[in-house]
Length: 241
Image (cartoon, helix red, strand yellow):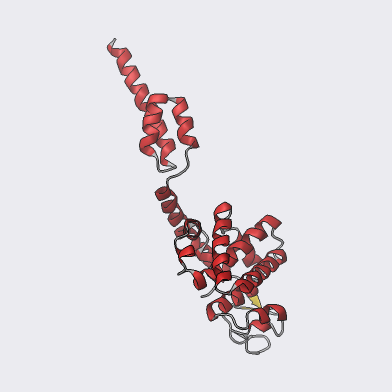
């Protein structure tokens, strides 16, 4: 009789520990142990189907972002850009081309973008101009690296809708359309799949316009915007620096 009880207790503990292990990947170790211990195999399935807790997702995002950001920064910084005068590859930070000795425009949007895009941003705030200047300077390989890191899905779409609505309320609606056009062009130039180009453009608009409308209650208190900004890859989209 004692041996049977011992077997039951050990089985109960093992089942609970398996449930806790499954739940730990979602921040639900306690619930996983209880469900695994009392429901066994069915408890494991229930835990596996549970979504991660908000605290666990935020912590995981922060960990991934901390690991991912240096690698993204290093990968992008290793890539050069073409000189607008002679076309030779030069360092992104270069102010004078080492091949033709021409001075490299640092803030002239018209020199790196279409006339239509330059006109659209002629009266834009400095931060927005800086973002678009960097965006239009990105080479296809850089766009590919950054696009692979961006948040996607319904959260990004909801965040986009909130930011654009606030931008339109402040008279920045034309900037949203222009940023999207510039990002879409860079995605097509990089031969990104259409769905990735769409997500890339959506993320670019959010990151470009959020500094202009981030203090609006409709944006500041928007759960989708907060979740979007907490996801890995968002820091890589800060092109204003």
